[in-house]
Length: 123
Image (cartoon, rainbow, N blue to C red; front, side, top):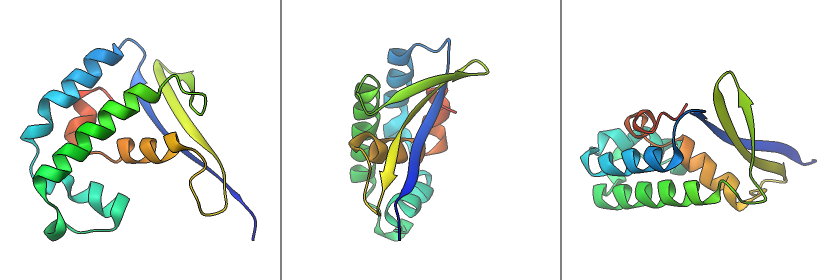
């Protein structure tokens, strides 16, 4: 079997200030319920809601948000403009492993609870 190209991405409105987006997202993390994290943990860890510790979930979300915004200038990240959005991408060839550190982070970021993504105008 050969390698596959894998890409993780997210978009943000071109006019959205990145620092403001991050701050808005961080400001509502502690308001999220266990149920809000259900899809996140299912998609990222294949774990269901009974196994979620809410405080740990909130801390992980804060770390993912913080680290994602820090990586936007990394060499393994690129961006394109499309219909008024800036799409950030990371990825590469994979033999079952992660092609870049930012790829894993972008996968987590784009899977965060919908309330968080909407707060930051993330699409």
